[in-house]
Image 1 (cartoon, rainbow, N blue to C red):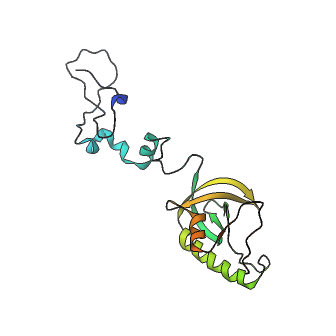
Image 2: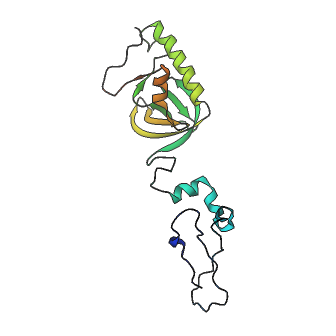
Image 3: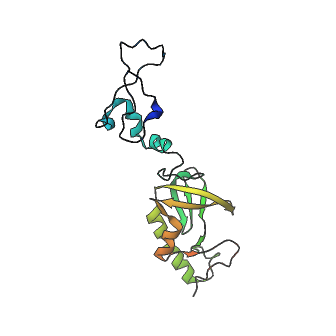
Length: 181
């Protein structure tokens, strides 16, 4: 009986490992693989490594099925500073790219209305971020903060804050939105 190599399986649910015939006189020094039937492949002891999400991601490397895009990093949120900035457990400050939220400090805000809107934006950001693990891709640096595209629970955080009405689109080198009118 011929031993199938690991790479010969065509797809999921196909038995990947076969036991060699014990009476075989093969000079192959490799140990025989454990046999798993097509029906029971998900219960196969030899396939337990496939049960972890990281192994599946490695198996599918380069495909859309992996949850972290190329070049992206993850971190857990320690606290939210304001509507567009938060700090990770690592201590790194992250500024959400391509949005502007109103300021919460009197010396930075242009009017009292901006401060009120800034406090509301901060509360919404806290509700979305507190204690969560985020995925982010660095796109720049500003005022000792990493500027990054951020995803939380599979959604783009900037787009979510804009949809809630607590932030507005803002591209670098363009005028900041007016929060006082």
